Amino acid sequence: MNRLIAAIAVFTTLLLTQSCSQEVKEGETHVSASPIAENNPHSRHEGHGTSDSQTQETLLESATTAKLTIPNQVKPKTPVSLIIDVQDKNGKAIQKFEIFQEQLMHLIVVSDDLQFFSHLHPTYKENGRFEVEANFPQSGGYTLFSDYNPADTPEQVSVLKTQVLDKTSDQPKIDLTTTKTFGDTIANLKFSQPTLKAEQEVVLTFDLKQTNNQPIADLQPYLGERGHLVILKNSSPLKRADYIHAHALKDTPLGKVNFITKFPKPGKYKLWGQFNRNGKIVTADFWVNVQ
Image (tube, rainbow, N blue to C red; front, side, top):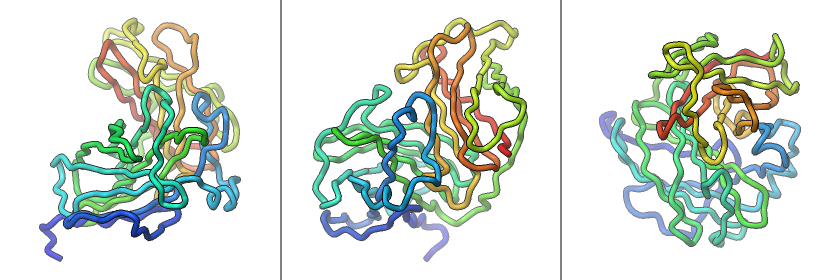
């Protein structure tokens, strides 16, 4: 295939299933992914991700399948339409979804080197179909975490992968600095214990200041909370067990946002904290080492 023509090779890190229930238009790639249900009742607010202790039985009992349709020809830095169809295990479209964190679906798109991060909210088009426009900034592999909650079922996450143009190095650049500046916001990441250890609860604090070192006083709710946090373990390939979707605790001091979570395994993790400063979303990313 001509290396100058964008070829999207889509596959999943979970169960890859073939489906003939929908017609695929010419020039599009169609793929199915069976998600793992998020059964931890505290996961939305305390950030407990799904750990490897979940059994294969849980995976097989998944109530839905997410199908991604994406054009075959995609160029970096060019908007592209993504279609996600959510169906039950019999191939019938899911009709109703519950709103959580003010949205029906949260779509987290990351490059496999964990340098690019995008948090999108696809629009529901009825009959189980969601649509959103995405932009892939460079060649390489990307992983999409589709987080949604069908009515009367647990919150679920489907994991899909796509390749834009030629494969590039997926080796991340790891920087364990805990204080960074993002535009006009200085973020200092602090921990409730001196050493992060796998399977131990920890409070992560984002201490946010203005560039004049004064506490930020213009924080507003983002998706109904004081902040939002996505955590991914540095793995190849990225999979559902590497994904933690956390939300901020209430009643924190001025300029500070706290999250409580648990890292399932030792290793390096990338964190993306998101905060609303008077209508402007600030994304603060950090690496942490877990023993």
